[in-house]
Image 1: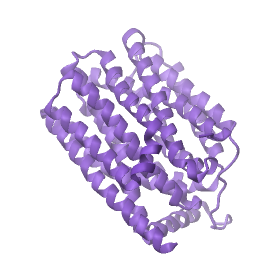
Image 2 (image 1 turned 60 degrees about the vertical axis):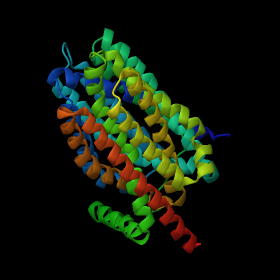
Image 3 (image 1 turned 90 degrees about the vertical axis):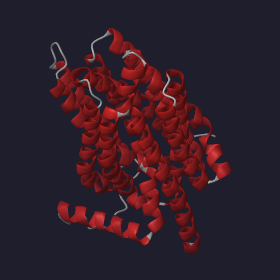
Length: 404
């Protein structure tokens, strides 16, 4: 498949920014676990992330739908890079927990704007018939960045100061912003709300239009909800990684890279074939298979928690996650009007906040008493999402056929 220049730049930016994200995720997990001795603190940070996303969602959706997506992406990553690097310069010796919290806050605030703009710009630079294959490559690019970041994190956390992890995260945002500057200025607003209105009235009108669209297409609402499984399930893995390492890998920091790297490698490998799998099986079956497969992976670890099986199942969960993500995100982008794509993306975030706000704290609470029960709980959540995904895509396909 021949991708456009802008599509290739999107893939490159995804790789670079996720190198920093891979480093940051593991560094924060290790720092918090070392200081508190509990996975609960990391679970709280993940819940805090979803809270920040929830609060910034209400502004992000309409803003993204009104302005060029490439400019928005440049602005978000540029601001995050400047803030992180500036704060790191203030640190003298030991990395204070308050600094980690501040940097996390900035990263979390920017995520809704970044995700919405990225979701909106993809169908504008990739032809509709190539979106499925593109998302397979995009998932591989995402995981390539994560994988490189994970490998670097293992080395950095073992031999260097954790502050270097945060510096590299800021540098990755800076390079990503430069790449977005090179992308054509596409994704201008199609909103019909008068620009003379006050900003708060425009904000309310924009969200009212988006809600009306969801109410008129029930299949769309269910598909958006089903797609948040691809957000929540990796967050569950991140919340349990430090527990796996502490209980089954003698607390070795390098094991964090091994486990998260196995997930990334599985997702990267599946990304090369995901487009073909979705085309062959259909989006409904592919989504259900991907989500149900992740549930089987969690259950397998619960019943056979040995290092070799944990690594293998992390690979499998990463692969199945890519398949479900590719099928659902392609279905959403191809069948959603471009004037509300930013807000559709952020509805996903809002649904994810609601689900993660319940499941992540419960998961980490269960892990304090029994890691097996926590894993079985994650498996149950995966299977519920699988059922919803199958029903949602089928229902929306029926609605689309009626409209045509």
